[in-house]
Amino acid sequence: MHFRYIDIEARHLFFYFFESRRDPDRDDVLLWTNGGPGGSSSTGLFMELGPCRVTSPTNISFNPYSWNEYSNIFFIDQPIGVGFSYADHGETVSTTEEAAKDVAAFVAIFFEHFNKFKGRGFHLTGESYGGRYLPLFGSAIHDQNTKLSGADLTPINLKSVMIGNGCTDWLSMHKGHYEVQCTSVTTTPVQNIATCIDMRLRLPRCEKWYKEACIDQKDSISCSAASAFCAESITTPYTEIGLNPYDLTKKCDGSQLCYKIMDDIEKYLNQTSVRELIGADPAVKNYTGHSKLVNHAFWSALDPQFPTQYYIAALLERSVRVLLYVGANDFVCNWRGNEEMSLALEWTGQAAFSSQPLREWHVDGHVAGLTRSAGNFAFATINGAGHMVPYDMPVESLELLRKWLSGEEF
View 1: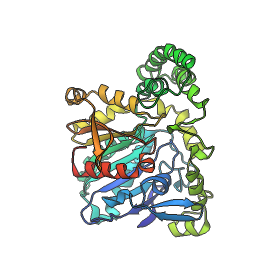
View 2: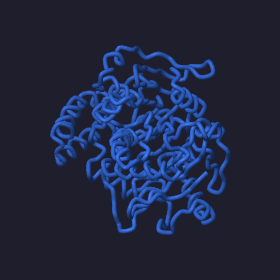
View 3: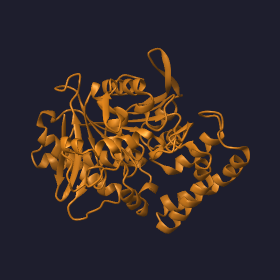
């Protein structure tokens, strides 16, 4: 395992790298990023799919369901200002387009440094705001390959993009927010009838205004107003009923993002002995799992409001496989919004994909969720999971990964 920084001019991106438990000399390489924007990938490592999990502020334990069972995987803190990553001169990143340039450069440097992995199959993975990040990261890496070839460097062998509970298209997600609160698509309705009726009446205006302001016109003032109306009408009522936004079957326990383990991870990584072990730079005074500064910068630039599914279509047209997997109990980036986006996606395989009915997929003889696929594109839900699938359903999560990497049908 390796903990270190990769420097891109005055920007320093921190990562953890773990070789495969199965066959490091043959298995593919994965990049994992958490979302936010502003979320550290230490959350993915120590809470979800890494080789070990934090069990208290001072202890970790072995995770038998780590994704490095079948892959070489690195967890990157990005953009700068997130986790242990930092810049020398107060530089900041406020858009996914800017972040994509740094990540593409990082990946090229990574494979030059860890050169035994050159040419190995490479997969971009992540969750949540990863639905915005990863399609642009994949596009930047794909387009960068021309420059790498021209410089006599080995191109990146980008095989696939795996997006977990992604918020890729907020227009589709608004309707999903209504459906998971007020219909039985996941559980029995969680909202009262009066609120649901009001929400249903406001939804068409939300969708129309949002599309005109944020997508067609990209007008910052109008988009901010439309987003505020949609939030007030569709998502704010959910925050008022006390349920976990990342799992509508649970109450929020009052901890950071409703999960106590996230508080424990912060305390664990702020121990002097741990910081010294992983080589955290003293320039980062205090580790936090979620950077409010980065989050504010991205929202101020309206970065979350711009749809990203067009990049998914472009990657599919260039033979890059894409998987959208979604924990069925998530509210924030719910399965209905993701399914709606996937069906509406315009690419040469759209008709074949949309004509497929949802069917069950299984793990160890039980139904794990629903799936639909055609060509390079697949969609899957995971029953019993919320926003963070590997945390809630580790067995199913690992089997999903194994099948995807091996090319097996779900």
